[in-house]
Image 1 (cartoon, rainbow over the protein chains, first blue to last red):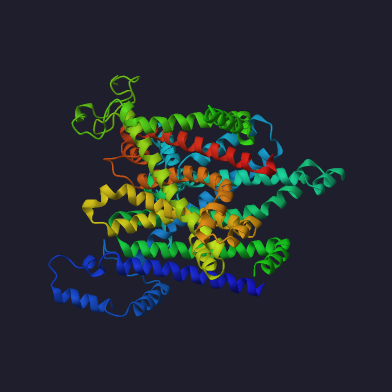
Image 2 (image 1 turned 135 degrees about the vertical axis):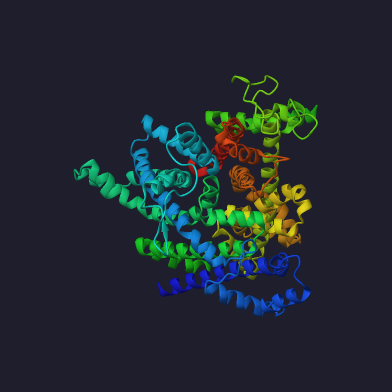
Length: 330
Length: 310
């Protein structure tokens, strides 16, 4: 177990270093950082002083070490665009993205699991076919189109929900939340559905196929023979055993929710990290791009680590399998 | 005469094969294939069948801008699906847009396959440190969603290419970015098949008679690894088309002067509140139809080639 955790931690550190290296090379070698920071009328001497103060004359290894050390302390330099520290920009945007990701994750789970259970238990009913068709469309529909269609329906045609922004937000000092006001909650509805729809169909399909598999097993037949109620069998015995893969997939998808938030935030002009990133790509604002990349990578690494540990803890069979498989490959 | 007989024999064999049989038995697959073929044909023939030329600035004028589809009051029968904000015929734009979307999707897929299959073959055949190194790279890349990788490469290229060339090179940048973001799955699958095949007797025989590793990999191992690659390629084609549309929608893909379906949706999105819904909805529907039909074909192919399900 400890060896497993150590191996995963080392892997996580390698991923972070690689991403750090990419972010550093972006900053250092794509365009000239000094050129981006000075204005037209600055003299050569000013430029040279800036170059020296940024340490750009040092060897590349020293520069990377300093970059990594600063990044580890949350210092990513200043944005080329508006000269503000990148860490400050991102910290201001982080709450919006995390709240959006949380809400859409909840939406996906709370709708996906019941729909999956239903279609798994009643395969032949009309409602199950409708769910299946919806899920197929959900998988083929690009996120941005879902968002546009929702805006067209609920904002343009019926005018009941806002189409952009977070609504009224409450500032808690270190965190801004839209969860405490009515307009903030209303503003969350459409973006959450847009972002969560794909994940919902994924969870639904997963739960469905797992339910189909589980319902065929002997212990379900035995539970029936014991005369347990349908309710107890379906939810107490069957659903419980489908949840292990659901936990894994949900964990993994949490990471892609953060990435796909870029698209949703663009459609709804949601003031989160993703919108910041896409504007940075448009403006070639490299420090912001690099910092976003590293923060998202950090989220990914942490989530993957937690999911691995959770998986390891939840499924005792895996420990044996892993040991056997490990013995074969090495 | 002999050649004709051989051809007839061949057609009969294809017709009677398991995959062809399973295709005839699946109405969904037939439907999806018909839709996909129509869209592909339309895309290929776009320059000849489109009623207007959306790239020739002399053929459209602002007078015709923002016209609705012909069945709505104010519509003009010259523009069956209406016009965009510059007066370009939407139907022609969609035909050309489908062509561009399919081209980017197809070529980025070919690129991803070329990279992935090469890496997979080398990694699986060479083994050892080469294998470990290449697969670690694949692992790191796989821990990020493809769309993020594509966005990053796209952003990088934008920084490296001078302003004036950006629009002209946009399509190549896109193909490169999407291709790089999708090679891992091909590499892993090819590597898996290579590991299985390289210990079989025919490969050993080829090695003993002195064929070079390159010939063994390409002529002997690769043909036996094609089945699963085909399934991934079909599903990834749908994904590549979606990725291209998404990047173009985000404004870092193709410019409005040579719009793909994603660019058209982006243009329309800016005018959604002015009631110009058709600029968004028609390209959107085309995109969903295209992706859905390719997805359904991919699903069917996966089942048809999977001996466990037969």
